[in-house]
Structure formats: C-alpha cells, structure tokens
Length: 221
Image 1: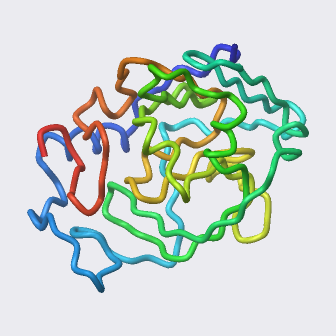
Image 2: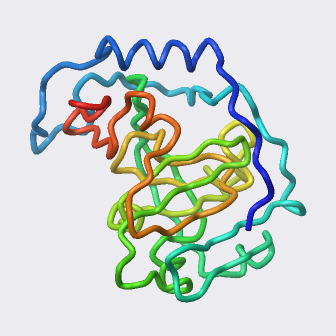
C-alpha cells in the first residue's frame, strides 16, 4: 500500500472554493451542448495553465515515485517509475476544463491509458468505483466507466516534456470529459471499490461526477 500521505491544509483557495460551492458561483443554467461548441457553459478560454492545489506541492522524484493499485481487483499492481513507463504508452490531445471556470485547449499528454491499466489489474465483476489517492493527501472518486474512458490516461509528460511538479508530476490522472479536479495530481494510489466513496471536494459541496457540459459543479446541481 502507499505510504501515509500529507494531511491537506486549509488555504485561501480552499476556503474560496468552499464559498463558491455554497454560492453556486459560475453557474449559468445552460445544460446543453451545441454540436459546434467546444467551450462548456460558464467557462472562459486561457492560454496559461493556472496552478491550483491544496497548498502543498509534493516533491517526488521519479526514482522515489511509486504507484499502488489495489482493492477490488484480481491482480494488484505495485509499480515504480521504470515499471510504469515500460507499459504500453499512449499519446492524446485533449482540453482541460477547470471548475474554477477556465479552460485550456489542445494539451498533448503521454502516459499509460487507463484502459491498459485495467487490462493489467483486472477489476472484479462487482467493481463500480475508483478512488484516486495523491501524495498531498488529496482524494477524488470516479465511476469505473469514467476512469476507463477512451481518452483517459495516467500522464507523465505534457507537450513533449516530463510533467512539472506544479502540474502533478511525476504522474497525474487525466480524464478530459470531466472537470479537472477529477484528474488527481501527484498520483500515489488507485483504489478500486464496489461502493462509492466521495473524495476531498465531493464531501465539501462539489458534484460527485463533474460533467462540464451539464454544469455539474456543485452538489445538488
């Protein structure tokens, strides 16, 4: 199993995001996706890549990084970085949609497709959910179908270079069709479950799934 993670600390950003959930900030009420529209409702486009976290940026070298995959699976996985990059590699280009209302187009990622990971660990027939555990103590939950989406992957590179620590390196999850808080940074462990277990933001007023096109920003949306 993974080492004991950091304990998330309350920061100005986390306090603001809790307030936004209470206020319903950024909601437009537009729940449909026009065929030719790329930007979800309530979002604005940026060329930058803002850095958002819980106030802790873990400094994990590739030599010390480990990934534990366990729970409701037939074959648990315990990979170091060399074992991770020895798996089949995939490259995807996708957009980022952050719940704080910014979006960034055409991000090129390289890593291990979640479908390839699933083929190795083999979730049990009764497995329905996944919880991501990060080195900073962060957690977030996903339905198994969302985790195994066609363009989802465990990314170690962005735009042809190793993923920077501030953006979640050495390895982060990327699930492009959901708000980006579901794409856990500094990935440490993947836990497969038969029952749902909401994560850090999900128990603090944020939506359990997080579909940008349905504006699933907050609980009750």
